[in-house]
Length: 310
Image (cartoon, one colour):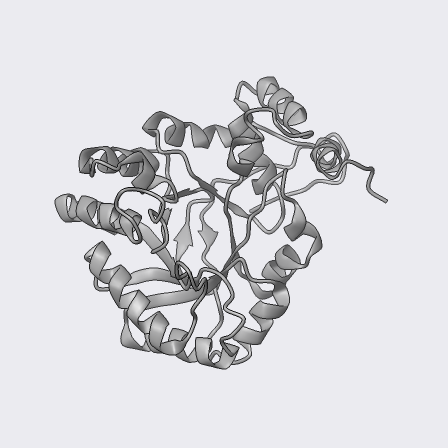
């Protein structure tokens, strides 16, 4: 378990113990791999390269694999592209599936831009499963809030997914705590996850109640863009120098240090690694080399905010 001692010089230690996926009964490795850029990296439909990435993630210990129907919309394969590639990889290597916890998302519609109506979500899930070539997935999340959908109707769609056996558990992505509460009020079972953008460059979930709600409700926190789209690695952010220096102290790079900063929070946030290079995916495990004291962790936060904490 995450552990914080009382002395200022003691490190905030990370644990490789599996993290519960909320109250689903499923446990996952504390780092995940995401496929936001998968279709962009494989516009030529290189399934061998996709398999190599999956194998690298599994070798690193990763068990949670994050995708969405919108992933690939800006690449040659178009909408659903990342799911298509993952589905083809699993068709060639079905043995990989038993080692994977697969999460996908729906609700973003190009040009609309959001649709969380019951009818649309039912179609979106079936389309995702068809592209993946799977009868069910462990986790389905609403990708972004549809302001024109009553949370009662969204809950009806999610409950039907679980009842059908096509989805084991459900969660939300980019939802505020109030939006999450509204949805949960109409569900007959607990949401298991929330997926905010969270990094040293985007610390808003620390202040807007997202992480507090997750700890209070036992949600798994799936942190997307933990490297802030590369800004924390390219030193294009006020906190990046401190992060790079911390990594160097422990023989790791800035990317590993940025991941460890996210993981040090007591919500046990699971950073989603977006690299599409097997070597970089494997290197994500270097996050465990990096230690932070509370003073060092807060120094990064203050650098990010650009002002001292009160």
